[in-house]
Length: 552
Image 1 (cartoon, rainbow, N blue to C red):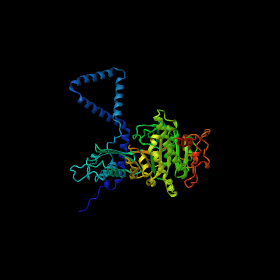
Image 2 (image 1 turned 90 degrees about the vertical axis):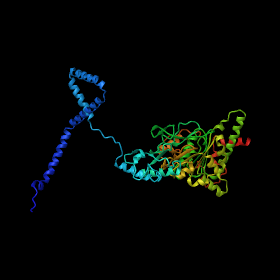
Image 3 (image 1 turned 60 degrees about the vertical axis):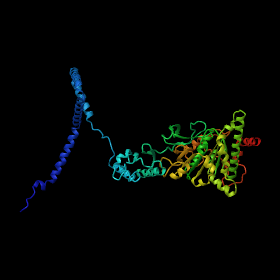
Image 4 (image 1 turned 45 degrees about the horizontal axis):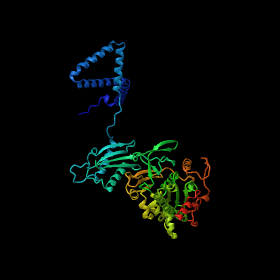
């Protein structure tokens, strides 16, 4: 049987059919654009009619008569008013156009990519939140993730910024190791390079993970608004503390949330220990504390590194000594121990005699030690006592005598810290990159955030006594005599420093660098038996104190 040929319109007219379809589609699109206002009004009239019908059906029967009479009265009034019908028609058309406008659909759930990410995160949590004996597990392979992830939010890049997880009651959320495993998993699956905050609600069996904003690094050294005995260690998250202080951030003034360390005879954390990696900002922290301490007290600085980081403090009002050599450091710390004893004796005599405590006893004395481990190594090699041994009296009795000790060192020198230092430094700071184990070993508790692998200088964690672990960003307080320091930060530090005794105020443009001879000797030079800076104190406080010790 011969096969019939296809009709000509089907065999040779495919191009014409395609062209006709394109013309028809173009005409339809053009007609839609032209008739779009009419379509919008018609859609609005339909929605208004549906809304009116629903309201009429919801009206009780005993109220339909009065409403119908009121509507008829309104129609009659509009008809009698000049241009009333035209104005009523324009009003109805406007309401219909507004009602029928195209609205952006409200997102009510995650899209496909976000659902895939949440599903993967749910499957990753199954081994940690499920046991084989559970008859109705919340977490199971192939289960419903919407039952456990009650709240979630994503950023513009599709990464999680907030997640609330409901976990079973038998999960051991009271164990730090179990919680750490969950936090590490969520941190890994949600994206690295960001800091996450984890809030555990053991009573409700819920975990809330949020992404933290980076702490500001542009706040430089300045005179902070604080009460006597308060020192600003740095700044933290807005919801971590209940207090704000006004700060200068560049050319603007803003409120920041400070980590305030309180010292004095009523403080429960009278001394501070700061640890970190090289270049983490521990010296910056000590320098910032020194600038604030000089506003109301006297300062002794012992620089174990011997790099001249504290050369800007030499000769300033209130700075009793800046030592970097072993002999000078030992002599200075020995004087500090005797000064602490003198303050205790004179304060006790004044209280027993019913007299007020002398002003020189009430004035705070700050002992700042940077890198004491280096000096301890030099002292052991030279057969001399460790400088930390001379801190026993200031550490144990400093709170009653108005003496505060601040130590800063690196992680590799933790083993060289004496038991007295570890016991009496209840205010702790960890700066720079560190693991959760290192942070917990120093602060006594793990942070409730994930430490990032790369942090700016001065970034870390702080804990005052038994309080919570807080994120911390130390104010930018570089060495003003360092060539790498920016002009803005150099001027900020110089403005916060007290003036030299008898010197006129210096112009901001000038570079007030001291002569090299004004800086104390380095850690290798160990020939002076008496610290030079101690002898050069203009006020003569050290000599007066030593004479008082000899008399009493």
